[in-house]
Length: 354
Ligand SMILES: Nc1ncnc2c1ncn2[C@@H]1O[C@H](COP(=O)(O)OP(=O)(O)O)[C@@H](O)[C@H]1O
Ligand SMILES: CC(=O)OP(=O)(O)O
Ligand SMILES: [Mg+2]
View 1 (cartoon, protein in one colour):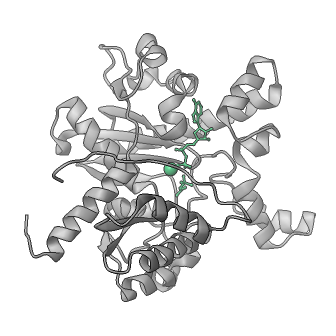
View 2 (cartoon, rainbow, N blue to C red; view 1 turned 90 degrees about the horizontal axis):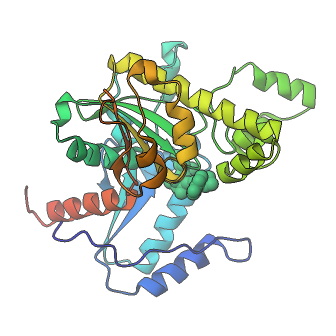
């Protein structure tokens, strides 16, 4: 892109008396008319989209047809597209999918060991999420390590509200912790991550709940919140842990342990690693959590530099110079990836080839 400058950034909360349509209209009002293109984050693209795409009526319908795969995210994403297309009817709208980066995973990574017919009939497989974030930090890590993409084995830990760990080889996603939906993988703020699936009918029977009730609990009342009974916010839990609260300590220990599982799985999948990346709200801002994760991974060649971890800020290497695996903090920038994709698609539309 000619320039990659952020002009404005903000958050307008959505509340019951300030619904999405009003919230978005307020944002667009503030942004004004000087807009050439809108890039929309669409969480699930299933296997229909392996790259960003201009939103036509046909593409809109295709996204709608897979919304059941991400009921918490896609319908809201599409509502945003509708409002934005009404507000800016004469410009291009582009869909950028969380899933598209992971379309390079091989079948042994993305298939579930259930009858193959369910994959063929219903597309039940692992898709993976946070793709724009993993893509962004990959690009930055290649620059920081000054090595060719196809020589690097990277483990990208996106630790925010949602958490996903991705093994990257040859500049491509090779495996990732989230699954068919963003509920799978590591335990998260309020999401359980992977559990024994037999727990679901058990809870239905023992607690007199419907499947939807149980899924709701696994999405909204589990993870750090479920174990601690206090909060889904790592900062609050670290404070309680310091004051001797056992359940806060347990929740954090379990969280770290689940992240270890996926870092270990990534090391095995990649046959080692050259870099370990921390990104997103917790990964970027919590030296405590980064330290807790890295302690216990020395066997694999991960040695933190305490000062860089605790005192530095922004994008940096936080491992000791002697650490065989370089540990990096890379503030993510999903919006930049989206803007770049939109820009390239607009050139394509204008008939300009790169
Ligand atoms: N300084 C910090 N220490 C620990 N956690 C933090 C810090 N700052 C933000 N967070 C956590 O980051 C999370 C939000 O991450 P973010 O990547 O912005 O999430 P999302 O984009 O998925 O909504 C919240 O759970 C918040 O508690
Ligand atoms: C896909 C997903 O989990 O996104 P978020 O972390 O923004 O909830
Ligand atoms: Mg996010």
